[in-house]
Each structure stands twice: as C-alpha cells, then as structure tokens.
Image (cartoon, rainbow, N blue to C red):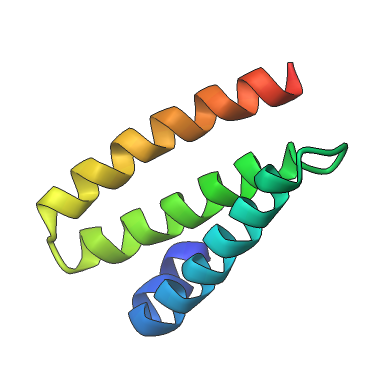
Length: 81
C-alpha cells in the first residue's frame, strides 16, 4: 500500500519525507527522553525517498538513501537496544 501511495504522488512523498527529516533533527537535537524517536523518523523518511528515487530510476540517490537507511538502522539499534 505504501508503495502505491508513493508512486501515485512523488512530490507529496518528498514533502512528507522533508517534514519527517526536520522533525527528526529537532528531536535528536533536543537530547531528551523523546530524542530516540528521531532516528525512527529518519528511517521512515529515507525509506519513503528510496521508493520515490526508485520510481524515477535515480541510482545515485537510491545509493545515498540506502547508505542512510543503514546508518538509520544502526542509530535505531543504538538508541533503542
């Protein structure tokens, strides 16, 4: 379902991911008990953009977001486990 929504409107997905990234940065910068949710928002945003870039066959951005996803998973592991 998420794939269908993202493929339907790439511009909307980019805006949603941008908002998630800003919220994630604010959460991580606040360095308090809710900061750990920032890594999850980063992960969701990067997954969304990877679908968008895949749709547009933008290989450099797919690669970049793939690396970010790995970093995000590492961050989620460090914050949550």
